[in-house]
Length: 314
Image: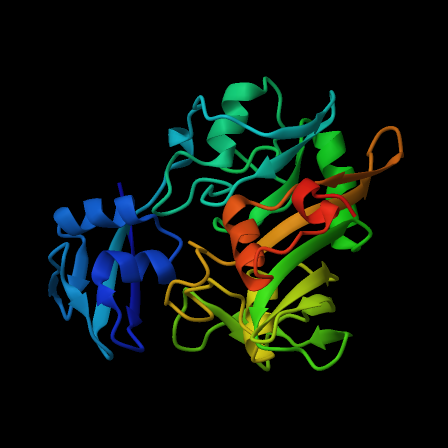
């Protein structure tokens, strides 16, 4: 099996190497620990020990095994299905689940689960991404629509490309937005130094994020966010660009634990699209994950949460 080498330079002292890499890459801590034991992670040019510490300026190389398309297999992984018919299904994806196999995540993904639970999936995405019309980050929870046939896939893909399908998110960010609502229109592309990250760059692709304030908590703000475009890590990058990084986001914000969050407080709570066959406009919602709810309760001093927050309805 071939390998891909991922290289970057640590920007700050960050403690144990496995924990640091889990925060700044898309790989799980267990995968990283295995590669560390196998000698596939180099720190300053030498195989790193599993308990090695990362210092500012350290160079890290990860030799990541490449996934072959023939390796994708069905796996009995539970799915939270919001809706299903012969053309599509809507999934509530939990935090921690990767959407499709990729370097460092050969299995345990949503695609592996889909192959187990459904006989038919669209072929447009190939064997690595069957049925996958759009994606969300591993540590972002929320709604995804999956196509069971090519007809549905093509119709849905057009809606996402033309931005007629609506994706609504909520997130907790650092600091207090002065305005009640606004739009961030700033191009996004690969970070010029760290190729695993995205950034606002002059020659990037146009990215537009609309936001409005749901609640202010002094040092943090609860936001409703609508995507007009769908760039990689768009909301996370735009919030960091606006100097209000998402709480719990170790890649674009702080690596320190915050309010009981174990990853970014970003949740795709509502998805709206037109059914490809019936042409019915459909809307689905998903309740917030537990760590997000816990953070909100701590910020509001355990005050009562709006009903839509706990039930995913608005």
